[in-house]
Length: 309
Image (cartoon, rainbow, N blue to C red; front, side):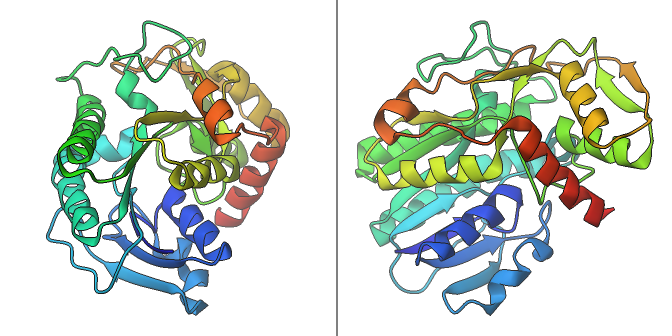
């Protein structure tokens, strides 16, 4: 296939581009490099089937030749990023999704939206199933990301129903691994960076809020299986094993053999208290479930951050 990946130089996008190339596909990576790094994709420039386009997807998108799939992964994805870039976050979820869908329609290509577990907000049910509508504060500081993704899902479904564009919507839960930015504000890079530097490890609230951590290679395989399927509705891809953030901090402290102290800070506004996917759909229809043990995945991630630091 010939595939366009928007946001292809980011954490997930770069792993996705690499995976697609390894499976023999031609990849066009599009990114404006606002929250991503060209270093993430530098090794791919040597490959004949890889092309990079520096472009903002909220502007008109033109790609020569046919496309089999448009994978829309462009967006700030960490709280620190979308609080710093609130309007670009809203624009990439709305205008960017519109432009990417228009391109898919023109090329008669399959469109995949990288959605998020954040569409569930601070959920009132746990684990979260795809038919749960969520509990989102539209005017809170996190609303720029949550509502951008909810709008993107709505527009994607509208193009599917009205224009008959084949679509895939992947609701991505917490993912970690090499190429995360150490200052992106999420728990794993925060804890690892602080532990390696010997700085206090900051846990928000009492640390009892949960996350479910999926190693990046597991997630990418799930995304690929969804792309190859014919499922035209949202599918959760993530790890159903919950862990409290205080426990995660302790594991990372032990794995890094750090002398850092764990300290507590105020809980951010609208920070979800629980986050855990119901992956029955992915298991049944994609034959997918995560396989990487948390400590093994964290060890690989810590090795990456040691080199970065």
